[in-house]
Structures are given as structure tokens and as C-alpha cells.
Length: 205
Ligand SMILES: N[C@@H](CCC(=O)N[C@@H](CS)C(=O)NCC(=O)O)C(=O)O
Image 1 (cartoon, protein in one colour):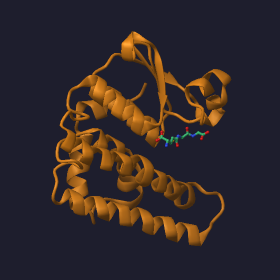
Image 2 (image 1 turned 45 degrees about the horizontal axis):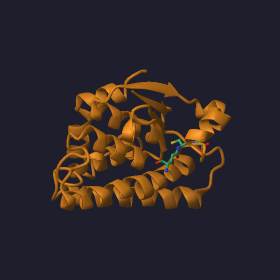
Image 3 (image 1 turned 135 degrees about the vertical axis):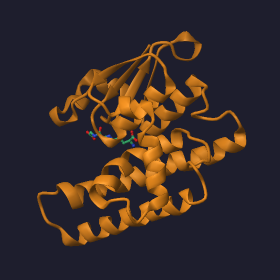
Image 4 (image 1 turned 120 degrees about the horizontal axis):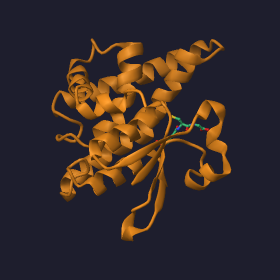
């Protein structure tokens, strides 16, 4: 059984989506980051950087309990444990999954979060930051659109790389920018949004 520590944010939904795609038995453990629950001493032992998502697998490698934070590492762990192709066995396929999994975790979401902060949520109007992060997000959506014009999914077959990128396309891409200028990204988004695991993962808990 896996405990998934999560909240209703882009990174939280990535982990919940990965969990649903994995089919592994799990329990959701909400960590209300607005109430600062991520700073609870017991939670910091699981996620030293006071972030969601995180997990505890009570049946980890060697049958021992293990904890893990960082959405990219969580997606990879779940994909490997599930063994259902989410994280492929083939070493060549893995290289491209890793590339786009890291892009989703390290680049795309990190910068999309800055768009969310400066363009959508900031109480202070900072035109230079707004202009910058609006352009950054549109540039990244264009990069994804061009790639998906030649590939059905980010690494050809559906994988954890897609899960890592879907979350912020689904939120900032669809709701804040709109996907009309990005038809390949729209096709990819809609295909993923229709997956039963996504419907479950983005539903109430
Ligand atoms: N690189 C981390 C980022 C996680 C992250 O930014 N989590 C945010 C919510 S989306 C959080 O927990 N913030 C609370 C805090 O920093 O105290 C990942 O991919 O898991």
C-alpha cells in the first residue's frame, strides 16, 4: 500500500494521475499547503523541502518502507513499480521518456508556475514580469505543439513524460492562454484528458 501526500496543485495532480495510471493500491493523504501543513515535523521527514507531492510505499524495494518526494521521481518510481509501460523497459525508449520527464518537471512546470504567480495571482501588478512569463509560457506551448506535430505522445508512446507535462497544459494552457493556436497540443491534451485515470485523478477526493 502506498500513501500519497498530495494537494490540489499542478504537481499534486501529476502524482495523483501517475498513481491512477499505475493501478497500484494507495491512500490519499491531503497536505493543505495553504494551512502550512507541509511544515509539520513528521511531514518534513518525508519531504525535506516542505513540498507536495510525496509518498510512502510501505512495500518498497526489498519489502521495506520507503519515502520519496519530487513529482518526477515519484512518476518514475510508480511507472517502474507498475511495469505497465508508463516508464518503459527499453533503454532507448527510456532516454526520450527521461528527456521529456525532466523537461516537464524541471523546466515546463517551474516556469508555468511563475506565469501563474505573476500573470494570474499576484496582488501586485508587475508589467515586466507579466510580459516575460506570458511570452515564456506561449513559447513553451509552441515547443510542445511543434514536437507533438511529429509524435503522438511526448516520447511516442504514452508515458510518465506526458503525465509530467499534462497538468500545466490542462490548467494554464487551456484555461489561461487557450489552445487554439496549438492544434497538435490540443489533440494531445484532449486524448489524455479523456483517459479514465485522468477523470479519476482530477476528480474530488
Ligand atoms: N519540483 C517539485 C516542486 C513541488 C512544488 O512546487 N510543490 C508546491 C505545490 S505545487 C508546494 O508544495 N509548495 C509548498 C511550499 O513550497 O511550501 C516537484 O516536482 O514535486
